[in-house]
Amino acid sequence: MPIDVARLSTRDPGLKLARFHFQLHILILLSFLLTSCSVYEPEERNLKPNQLTETYSLYREGVNKTPDKWWEGFNSPELNRLIEKGLENNLDVHQARARMKQAKAALEKVGGSALPSLTGTLSSTRSRMPDVADTDTYSLNLSAGYELDMWGRVDALIEAENLDFQASKADLETSAMSVAAGIAETWLDILTVRQEIAIIRSQLQSNNALLELLNLRFENAMAGLLDVLQQQEALASSKSQIPPLEAREKVLINNLLLLLGQPNAEGITLQQVQLPDMPAFPTLGIPADLLEKRPDIRSAGLNLKSSDWDIAAARANRLPAMTLTGSYVYSSNEFSTLFDNWVFNLGASLVTSLYDGGTKSAEILRLEAGVEEELASYKETVFEAVIEVENSIINEKKQLEYVGLLEQQLLIARQALTEAERQYTKGLQSFIPVITEIPKVQSLEKKVVTEKADLLKYRIALYRSLGGSWAENWITVNTDY
Image (cartoon, rainbow, N blue to C red; front, side, top):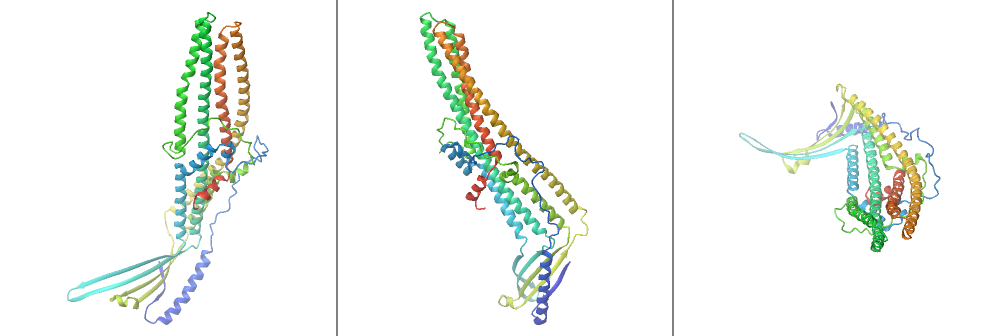
């Protein structure tokens, strides 16, 4: 029920004005005392799970600091241009940036509820009655309202929205990191296909040269028709591998264009063919570093804290709310004398819920259950991040061993092919060892290329799993927030 604290009019203004000032000072003092209370402020959370280990199980004491922009370690101007263009134009990044703007606007919206509201109304009416002259009435109403945040409800809502805004910035960082990694991996796939095509074309030249030799030997009765047909079959098999690879190259380029935020290759040049060298191994740090370096972890932690403040606001919402209201009302039958007749009202209302059927308590229980879910989700995000680093390290380590063994196998296969060709040309062996070793060598050459590309992608996965500050710096430079 509203309480009329003061009502002043043009009649007897002195005494009532003095009483008004006294009561106004009392209300202001009371508002400061009440709004200083924040009885439901949540406790500070320790967001470091107890289960985190001190080091990674395959920990390597890194001596090379990871570049702020890790892709620059591949020393490819082409890759640098592609990633910069993708960060600028990628549509997923644009969506994440728009969500961040929405969160910023929501923060400003709830922040406005902590300030007084002011409204004004100007009206004009004409009254007509029988045998009475028309009467015009003019009125101007200026009113203000302010909710005293006695229990910290409004402050809790503002803090929750601020944390949501910070979480949306972290989500934008995550999106930028995903786009950078996706562009680099797709670019490596394109280079891999191009190298496979180059290897097959080189093999075709060798196969053609060998076929010419066989035709010459066949004409001179030094080789059988079967040898010629087997080599023709091998040549046709090599040629048949090119169209699928060319199609895959085109598909990968289209996928890259999508990551770059455009539907065509206008302004895009892809000239590099050779895979880049492996950069120096980055500094790993410790698992606890991921809590700060991984934006997805920070986002999950910020959302968890935001939910804590939502609970604080819901608990404060069960307590009485006090609102101060004030208004100036000017009215007159003549517009010229509108400001000569006025009434000022100052009031306070105290509102509390006597019975709500348990809806507010149920809302608190719902929010508390949501916090339990988000806490479990946060821990899962942390654990997944640690496992991603562990997996990236072991994959890279074993992939490096695998590539080394493949290169040894390729070296031996080439030696075997050379010896088979030597013995065949001297008539010491049939053509069977040659036609057997040729596809082995050709398959291993392509295999080494694809596995080297996978090794580079494991390094990209390691960079991505370690996080970093480059995305945050990029947001600072490229946004207004």
